[in-house]
Length: 178
Image (cartoon, rainbow, N blue to C red):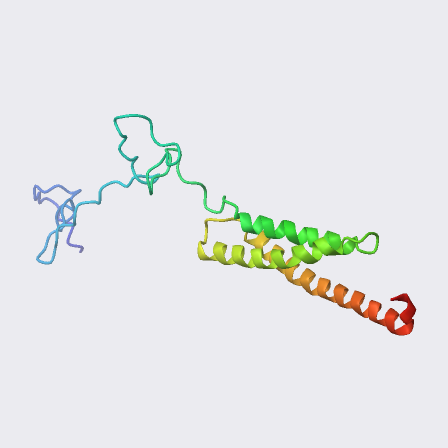
């Protein structure tokens, strides 16, 4: 018979709804250590505001103290755009368009000049974005601009080499034209 049952006719006077090992309100024993108090509550949106200077308005060049964010909170992770990524993408698009329009009008030079800058600017922006994960959201634009700059720099060099070879061939074939 389980130890919780009493024989008929005996009344032990104990509460039948309490566990036989005792109430579970407080743990006890020789190895029991009281838990530490909970930590103080954290401020959800950055540090508290900086103390205001009693005389005059705050400076227009530095409206917030260092490390303090406005009351509405910090920007969402990945919501900022790195200007170098956007610039690199724009320069890469200019390089592609100018190379595609070369047979129709002589627009090769803007593409030749924009492509290396797209390459360098995209590489710098990609490096900055990867150093600060979660801050900027346009890593794809930086990579795309960088790769467009690489490809268009190589194609621009081929186009220049082709024009030089064409001029040399014309000069060799008929020296009176040069």
